[in-house]
Length: 345
Image 1: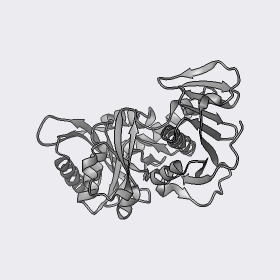
Image 2: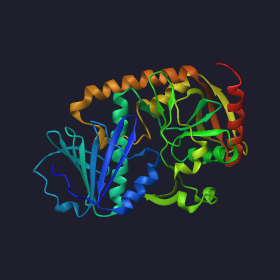
Image 3: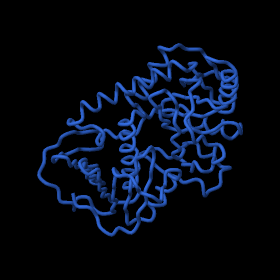
């Protein structure tokens, strides 16, 4: 694969021993990268296995591809494999060329918004796979720390996960953010912080946050206000913590939220969905799935299963039925966490 030479900007992000070096000629893309991955930006690049991704704004159809047959198809992409190199076409809008042998990627897209969407998802996907190799696994959840214990919220998209997290952070100074979307579970069951930017659809909920900590973004037909996690600098958890409570989110038509105790089996079922299967995790199937890696991916699944078994065994599990009042939801959760941390499971 031919890499673009002498691109104007270079940035590196690092997490869990994995470095991703990004080269681009777009200042806007660099600005967005620094916003979203602010806590991961590094000035050193000592990793011998650094991932390299270049981004160019250009017409993807001008890129010369060899004659190949498709290897996989999804709703928005088609892939073509040529040995260790994969060409991923996103219609006429973008092309991602990835060389797995060298761990190098090249993104060509018609505009900066589309290019950055492909870039940030590629970064998360490759970092996630490196974490899987180390026995560290992402789970689609909100996670906060309270009194040196982690509390996980497994909630499908649109259930108000980020809104709940913001209510807890705004109203309780002793709450620490672990991750708004993908905390990491270690093999011994500890919860490891992953401090990526926050995203919320209800922009009125974050009006009080200064504009320099916010940016607007659209994903398909959804619009989100993104929040730089560094706004909560004094309320972020930086070290791994042991889990204490697991909340599984549902909606209720009641005017008040409700909690129902649940057992180990319920905890495992939802952790299987949100960690082992990885629903909601930005794995990016067109990058993550390759027939050459089937055995490796099966190994990841068993490793994820061991990790969630340890988490489920340590946690008190609840079904959390949310009402339309975010403040009431957060107060019920806070009271429950306070009670749980006063007792030993």
